[in-house]
Each structure stands twice: as C-alpha cells, then as structure tokens.
Amino acid sequence: MTRASTASLLRNPVFARLWFIQAATQVGGNMALYAMTILVFDSTRSNATVSVLFATYVLPQILLSPFAGVIVDRLNLRWALVGPNVLRTVLMVGLALSGTNLPALLALNLGVSLTSVALTPAEGSMIPRVVPASQLSTAMGIFNLTLQGSFAIGFAFVGPLLVTVAGPSAVLAVVAGLYVAATIACIGLPSEPPLQQPAQGTRRQALAEPTRELRHGFSVVRDNRDISRPIIHQAAGASVAGVLGVLGPALATTVGLQPDHLVVVVLPLGIGVILGVVGLRRFSHVAWRRAAEAGLLAFGCLTASLGLMGPLHDRLAVSGISVIPILAGIAVLSGAAYAVTSVSAQTALLESMPAHLRGRIIGVLASIVSTASLLPTLVAGPLADRISAQLVLVVVGLVVALIAVWSARLFGPGPTA
Image 1 (tube, rainbow, N blue to C red):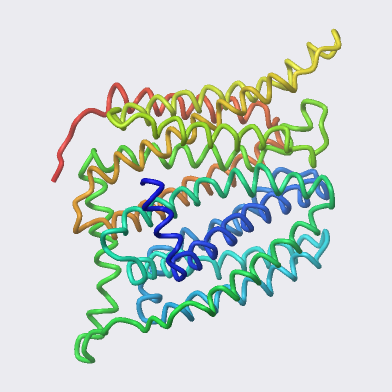
Image 2: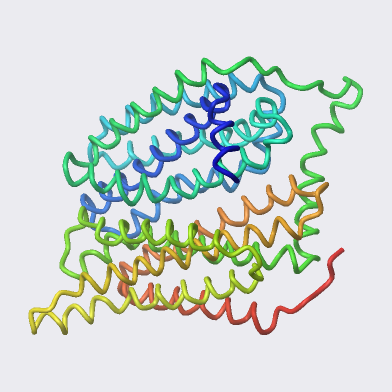
C-alpha cells in the first residue's frame, strides 16, 4: 500500500466519505466501550457486571454476523448504512442520558450492538462498488489499518483522556456527535440498489443457501489445519483481549489507582498495538504462522505477568517504589504481542484460504472470534469477584501460552483439502 495509491483513493470523494464513516463509528464505538466500562465498574465495583456489559455487545455479533450479509444483499446499500446509523445515534444519546442506570445502560448497549451488526457487511459490500478493481486491495488495506488503529485511538487515547477530563457520560455524548456526523455522511453516498435476486421459483432454495454455505465453511475450517490454526490463534488472542477489557479496572485498583485511571494500562496497550503493526510491516518474508505463535506465546506470558502486579505493588510500596512504570512497560509489550498475533494470523489465513471460499470462511472466523472473546469474559468477571482478578489473569495468560506451545509443537501439517 503505497502513499501515492492511498492519496489517490482518498481523493475519491465517495471512498473518502465511506472511510470517514468507518473511522468515526469505529473510534466512537471504542470510546463508548471504554466510557461504559469505567461507568459500570465505578458504580458497581463488580467484575461480573462488566462481563455482562461486554456480553450485551458481543452476543449479537456471534448470533447474527454470519447472516447479516444475507439481509444486506437485499437492501439498497446506502439505506443499509443510513438506517442503522440513525438508530445507533438515538440509542447513544439515550446512553449519554442514562447516567448510572444499569438496566438502561445494558439494554441500550444491546441495541447499539444489534444496529452495528449490519454495518460491517454493508461497508464491505459498498467498497467494491465505489473503488476500481485495481485499487481494491489498497482500499481494504486502508480499512483494515483503520480497524486496528481505532482501538488505539478510541479505547486507549481519546476515550481515557475525555473520561478523565469530563466523565463517562460526556464521552458518550461526544460519541453520539460522531454518529450524527457518520449518518450525515451516509446520506451523501450514491444509491446502490440490491443486485438481481433469484427468481421466485428458487426463493426457498435461496433462503436455505446461507445456512448450507455456513455449514460448509465450518467443515472446511475443521478439516484444513492451515486454515483452522490461524483462526485458533486469532480466537485465543481475542479471548485474552476480552479478559483484559473486563478486568482492566480491577487491575488498576490492585496497584493503587482509581478505575477511571485505567488509562495507565490502556494507553500503553494502544501504543504497543501501533508499534506491533508498524514493526511487523517491515518484515515481508516472515513465516506468518510462526510469527503468530511467537506473538501468542508472548501475549500469554505478559498477561500472566500483569496478574502479578498487585503483589509486586504491595512489596515495592514499602520501599516507596512505584510499580506503575513496570505495569506500563508490560502493557506496551502486551499490545505489540497482540498486534503481531492478530496481523500474522490474518495474513496466514488469507494465504491459505481458497479464493472461492473466502466469504464463508470469514463468516466462520467472525463467529468463532466473537465467541472466543465472549465466553472467557463471562467467566472471568464472576470468577474474579470470587477469587481475585490477579489470579484470573495469571491463569488465562498461562492457558493461552500453552495453546501457543501446543500449536507450535503438536499441531503439525495436515490435510489441505
């Protein structure tokens, strides 16, 4: 992805508008997630409640993502983007006005997630219609880089800064403003009516086709280790990221910080993600599977070490030494390890996927990774309330490190049908 090709694409007014929509909604969504995490934990001091918050956002992604594209294919793409953005803006205004009303926060967050499910396939379907085929790979590179960077900008930089300055509810109001801007940008997109649908006599077969293709996608993933292995790497990395998101506020309190000072952890994480992505782009001939395994092993070990920060804080506090610089350093390395794992696994997967099966395999990937990020968070929160967040982080980190070792040593070459 050269600078010249990127600049040429961004001079395309329709693509630039579409990219702005993605950037505004992705950054805003990460800002909102950070603000709600702080709001919920600060008002309840319950890790289990933070788990429920994450579940209300991830569960619709698991259940509906594989089928969202089927619905979008039958709609005018412009209105498939306008409608969900309008609804999501209204719901975000409600979140900003909800304060610490927990049932309202959870219900509205569930609504935001439901409206968001359709946006990813709608954006992905719009790109090939507004970008020439020769620039399609560059366009997807821009969107993927924005997706990676939105966490660093929204969850690690802008979100924590605004929470510290103005409070979580004010951040949600800012996010509502970003969604308003994205909605206005959507209205300016060209009309893109649905492609020709099957004839009336084959409507029943057309409705059954997505389910059949999804089953086929799962069977391909199960039978081809070169495909299933990078999916396992991404799922394991996502599970650790989810646990860190849920237990982050509790981790902050173990080292003497208030929950709204979680920025001490997430800001270095975001910096590490950027460093990992940028650093990995300098290597064009790496063995992507090995890089993903090494990144996952490091990510697991670093997560386990984060769980030891509480006891280390207690020991160093006697001597007047702060553990915060150590915590920040580990967070930077953790973010870099996660980025290496995610990007390397995605690249290995793309290289292994047959071209004619990419759509269904990506649908399976989205479902598996969302499930992997949800299930550990549902367990981690209540378990941390019963034992300790520190012990949960140590256990999760060691389990993921063992998965990396297992992948490297025991999960050798297999069928590549």
